[in-house]
Amino acid sequence: MLIEFLNQNNKSFNKVNLLFSSFFFSLMTVCVKKIDNRIPIYELVFFRSLVSLLITSLIINKRNINPWGKNIPLLILRGFLGTIALVCIFFAIRNMPLNISTVIQYTYPIFISIFAGILINEKITKNIIIASVIGWIGILIILNPSQLSSLNVDLSNFSVVIAFLGAISTSLAYITVKKLSLTEDVFIIIKYFPLISVIILTPIVLINWVTPNINELIWILGIGLFTQCGQIFLTIGIKKLPTSEAATINYLQVFFGSLWGILFFNELININFIMGSMLVLLGTIISTSKILKKI
Image 1 (cartoon, rainbow, N blue to C red):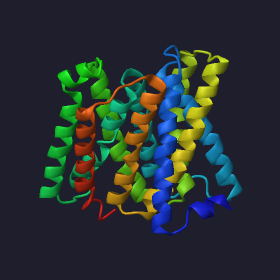
Image 2: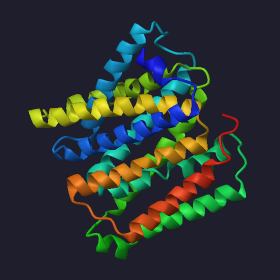
Image 3: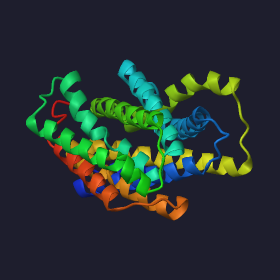
């Protein structure tokens, strides 16, 4: 079966899983950006979650897995954090250039290192401090007003804050996924993300419903399918690989995001953007090299 094939306990094979994860998540961001602004963000997240929930539930039923899992409180927390992260990420994608929103999102490994020290008593080492400084220098280079002006980009402070909130929520969700992967089936972990999203967003969507047209429905379907593929590859990959390697490979989404931004949305990049992105990547590599040992 395909799932068993993907779930092989082979280090090189699981690096490929994460490469595909980055690729599919990057395609999801293209779909989000292609949809007209008249469709609210929360409705996009709802549709994305509904598609994912239906697919995952079918897989769980076919595999005869206990549909509720073992650590229900932590599974619910994972779903709640994932919902917040996704709303923030979709907002940032819609309101910022794809390359910049993707770089900000991928500061999450640096936040992981910080929260691992605060929440699970991991020691905040000199490496983590150095990594944080390097990563933030990279972000400041990218978000410098003169740099943004050279790229013909005008960003609101609110959009930047929401983008970072998405990265923070992602880091917290990542920690819960790592803990859950020790005891829960991959598809139970995946299921709770859209399940909690659908529960939270259904009343909001019903009250403020906007009917998508055919073109928008195609992109919405793309969001659900590409996210589901990315989530499967990601959950399997981080379960089998060390955190540092997983985070570094996931950073490929910055490359994909920049490429799609150039090809589909006429976005620009320059040497400062490349330098800033490399510094964030360096911070990611350093910050994740020693963390989450106890998870």
